[in-house]
Length: 104
Length: 487
Image (cartoon, rainbow over all chains, first blue to last red; front, side, top):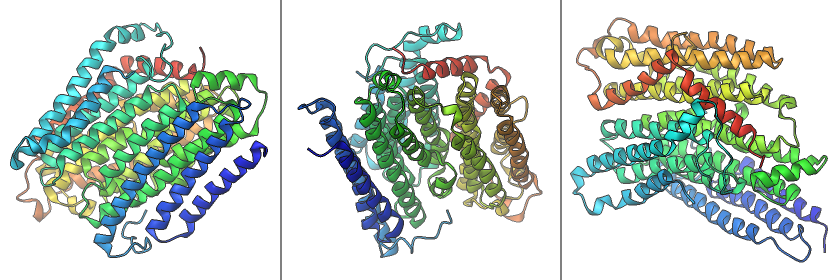
């Protein structure tokens, strides 16, 4: 069995991939995917660590936590996809560089 | 195990979208509005009946005992504060929306989302488990994304909504990652379990990483300085009722959740010695106030001032003492009503004049005297004028920073109050200027808009003159939060 630090590193790499996508990508759909990857990095970490706390036994509360959390991430993606659809109707593109009317 | 008032809020949010099958189309807004007023008032009444005894104990400084349930608790004093703010702002917002949102469609969904948002805040305030806190956090976030982008045909609000949703859901993912790190160190997510596990271990760098993740994640929602960029756009593009609600409670709930989770982590980490929080606090104040000086849009100016107020509240978090947290929660309470009145008045101007530009508002005080005087009261309170409630909480923030040897925080609070007077007084000067010619046929805002404005203004004046009840409530909430991890 691999040491738990490997799993934490993998999860952190997944999280960083998500952050990288958010910073560099310009397409709205890719940003949504980036957020999903970030959330999934956290899920991988949760599941991996849960099997290390007691030998031969996986903490069942963590599995339920991750299932609920997948549902939450799905609802966030649903909202984002609805917004992307409305943005496409307004701007006729999904490029976020076009959406610069407000100044931040 | 939900508390009865939370069940009421959830029930109304579920019932609301089905109204359109019962009521005819042209009466649907009135029906939804009345139903939401009934919902918020009944939740408030049932809550008050529940906690009457508790409030009496709190006012006599007898602290309530710890909760028996673990996941969702019975009432505690920190919940009372947030509940009163969230529910009364929800009530005021729904009264205000009767006239303000009359030109919009899809209003059953609007009220349903408002109820869900309040439910998220209440659940978050009463959580005793990191994951419960996260679930209710997401409930609050998702409903506020939809509320910001509610006017879906306007490109402005869609753009602000996308910006807000992307940033804030990245923040939620960051919080979740922080929670996994806490789980990695302690093996549980229950507050008491985490606290006792942290007492047992000696030192683990992962807990510092987790703290930074939580700071960033909650900080995005709270609009800490480099992560604030969504806030002015979202507040400007959202309907004014929603700007008032969000500025009043949704943003500062991030701060509340931050305090709540830091108090559990403080068994392993000395929060007082983390200079990052105090630096962020000073940056927030200076950035918010200086950026607000440069705006020419009333709602944007108020939004930047809200960033500055988050900086004031962070003073209490960075000193991390009982007086500090008390002052932060007191300012949270007072700021909610101040910003509620300010945004309601800005919305009333938008409703009558159809513009947010300050330059087109010359002399509006002469045609809309009631709204303008409420706005002036709230702005003076925001500066920190003595008989109003903003002064009380700023005074306590200053005292807290002075007593714990961080006088520079208090001094920057004073300097920033002076800077903020620059733009607040500019708003007042514009409003009181001689009438321009396009003001001739304007008249006062309708009564449905004036009533909630004045209901909140009464709070500003009353708690400025008599701050004792809310101060002891904030004090008992702070001492409860600081002892969250203990059995």
